[in-house]
Image 1 (cartoon, rainbow, N blue to C red):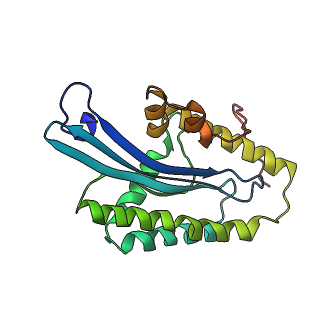
Image 2 (image 1 turned 45 degrees about the vertical axis):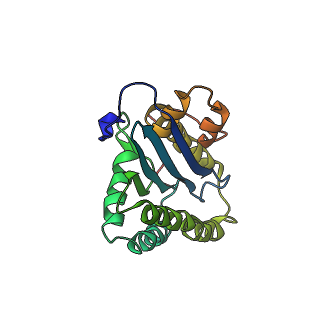
Image 3 (image 1 turned 30 degrees about the horizontal axis):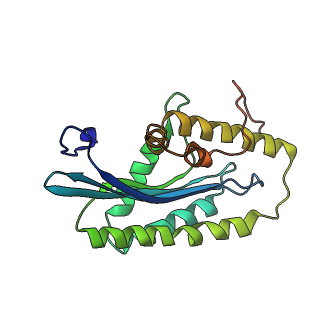
Length: 212
């Protein structure tokens, strides 16, 4: 935490953490995966209590649909703009940079918003912003599900979905900060920490999709 600018004392410090997370990995490869997490952290450091919020929502399509991406981002932007017009461009870039798989030279999906260490202008304002972001999840995603859920797909499309899910697994196990925090927390319930992983995924070297 000191690496992120937190001025904390040495030794064991009591802390409180709360959050809500969800991931949906649809069976139809034409319906994108969505992930969201919103959290609050509080630590007692002698004379003061330090607190901050973090979170975000991101979309991982297996087949890119421009209309879906525009709707998703517009809905998140509307939620951000209610509070600060600088939030969406800042948190969109943060999301693009965070959901990156350096060893593959790839991004995980089409982004969304991501932020951490949010502690201004005040606790109430931050909480209202986080609530609006969380409330934007359903309207950002359900129209995409309704648009594609009954679309028939091929076995080739299913195979491509499983390969892309392999990339999802790589990111979560190697780079995701929340996953690493959970795995290093004594007494944590590891099944809950790993719940974001898809049930099925495939890893294959040098795979090139067909032009079709």
